[in-house]
Length: 278
Image 1 (tube, rainbow, N blue to C red):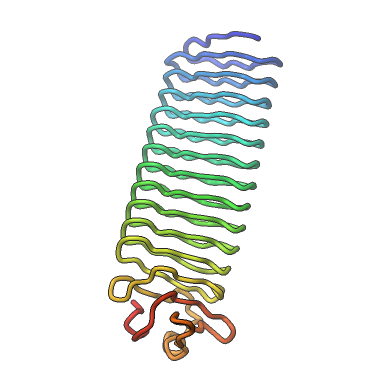
Image 2 (cartoon, rainbow, N blue to C red):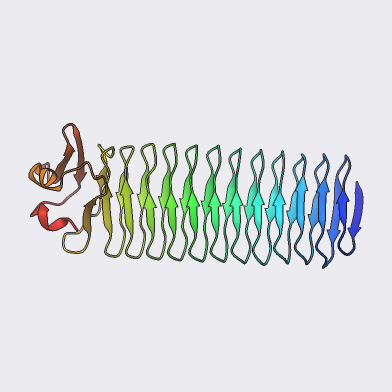
């Protein structure tokens, strides 16, 4: 195992083996070679990268740029506004305080935005992301992903795969992706977009809006409350009058045809459907 301390504005390029590296308050560039490395960036706006290995990387203070490379890495940006990429492998990443940008990339990754207004992008794999405090933006990408908005007014966008999203507290916006997704708005006045799959959705507490696209056939709204929540159509090819006219009660639920052969179900609700639309 090799130890190194980087002093001042300097560049360190590591070789093979397990390395332990500490930076100071300067703005430093530290590139680690193959091996299971430990790095603490210290203060300053650092650039930190590892080629391969199961690494532990801490950005500490400063606006840091970090990349884990190959391997199952543990990364934390620390304070300030950091940009982090996990690389390939099953990585666990925390943004720390500040407005951070985290890319999971390949592998089944776990991303925590923590404090600040963060952007979390999940790549290939079945990933989990938690925005934490702040108004965060989360992208599901490929795989069966799980997204938690946390507190704040968050945007959760699901990609390919059968995903789960929970907006948490705040007035959140959730976009269903390709696949049969489960979405929960949580507390707050949320907007949930259903499209490209048979989605199952709950608005949670608050005055929520459920918006349907033309490819959302088979979707179910589980907790619609007439007079509080609203329905909407966001696909311009859909005709509102035709959708309302198609309404019928099946087993105590209201079924609406978005177009011939494409229907959605409003569970446990019957009544004047025209009043349900925003």
